[in-house]
Image (cartoon, rainbow, N blue to C red):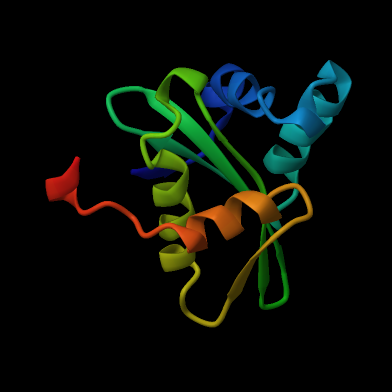
Length: 123
C-alpha cells in the first residue's frame, strides 16, 4: 500500500531514489529529498508491504500530476510493485487530475499500459 513520505523515512527514500539514473549524484539526491519535504506541490509516496519496497514521487501543477520518480528495490523488481504504485497514484488523484509521466518515467508508464496487470490468482 502507498504511504506518504515523512522525515523519519528519509534514509529509506534516499536509498530507493538513488536507484534512478537521474538521482545517482548525492547532492542531486539531497536536493530532491529537500524538495519533497518543503514544496507542497511535490508529493512522495512509499510502497509498504512488510517492508518499504518502492517509492513514487509526483509534482502537482494545476490539474496535472506528473509522475517524476518511480523506483523499486532491485530485489523486488518484476513483481508488479511499480505497476501497483502507478495505479494507486492514479486512483488517489482520480478526481479532477490528469496523471502523466515525466521524461524520466515515460518508458515505464508506457510499459505499464502495454501489459495487463496479473490477477491475484495468477501470482
